[in-house]
Structure formats: structure tokens, C-alpha cells
Image (cartoon, rainbow, N blue to C red; front, side, top):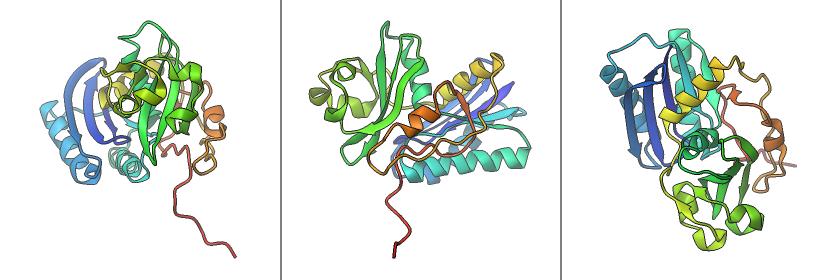
Length: 238
């Protein structure tokens, strides 16, 4: 199986092409404002480097992450899937980070993506990289003390070490398309299917756990943005 994977949930735009577990191509561009400009270029370059293979499926990081960035990646993945008539698989971007992080830590840990407004999107994982809490959105100081003291992965977590009272683990700064693909492939090979239900949106700015509860036990998601909080734009009320 050849998987084209992409992620735009963080400042990094990444694309990867894998044949099974073999990495054929990998492209990364870090700029929080350029997802829309660079994604198609990276996809074209990666496919060329990979030898223009027949892609069997697309895997895309669905967040949580910035509203605009997520829509660039998810809508692009949907467009490629429609054009090539192949399945599109959504993966929680934090889960993909955890898959990579679990290789370098032997205990529970947490992964984080910048949510702006001095907040983080985060989730807690066991030593095997299985999600145990989240995804949530909080200011670092609002997170339970026990969780704050875990090893944290993600460039944004490194910016809040004093509040987290934790150690920085800089080996995984952002979600990466390589891990999106490998995560999807692992669960496909285990016989899992794409979850039917979309997670409900949480209350704006205060994750009440609705999203996290909806994702318990789910690994392969439908290719829709995973919003942990509502966007600023809202319909006017009378």
C-alpha cells in the first residue's frame, strides 16, 4: 500500500509518501502563515521524488490545530482523494506526535500543539503512545499538576516549561506526515475501520471534555477538521 500523508495542524507543513513502512519521500516547510502556498508544491515534489507511484490512500492530520491551517490540509486531502478515487483517512495529529515520541520515552508523557491565546492543544499518553486524556485546550497553568510534571513533547510546550514544571523533550517538535502515515497504516493493518461519528465541538475556549470523550478508543477518523474549541466567528444573535 502506498500512502500519501500530509499535516498542516502546526506551523509545520509536512508531506510524506510511504510504501508500506518504507519512506519514499518526505518534505517539510515551517511557516505558520504559508500552509496554503506550500502544501501543493510539497505534494508535487514528494510524489516526484517517490517516483510518481500509484497512491492507494491518503492520510491527513485533522488536528486539533489552527482553524485555517487545518482546513488547508483537510480540504486538500479530500480533493486528492476525490480526484484519484481513493480513501482519505483522518488521524488526530497529537496521536501521530505520540507515536514518534513513544520511541524515546519509557513513561507516560504529553504532546502539545500551539493553540495561541497563551493556550495549548494537548493530550496525555501512556508509555506505549496510547491516548489516556484529551485532546483538550488549556492554558499551561490550568492543567492538573500531575500531568504538568510529565515529559512534554512539542515546541510550544518548551515555551512554557516554568508553568508546566516539566522537562522538555525536543525530539518531536511538531506533528509530522511520516508519523501520520505510519499511524494510519498500523491501525489499518490491525483491521480497524474509520469511525463514523464526528466529534462534537467543545465550548469556545473552555474544552469541557466533549471532544475527548467522543474520541475514546478511536484512531482512524473521518477526514474533517478536529476542532477542540469553536472559532471566533459566530452567527449574530437577536
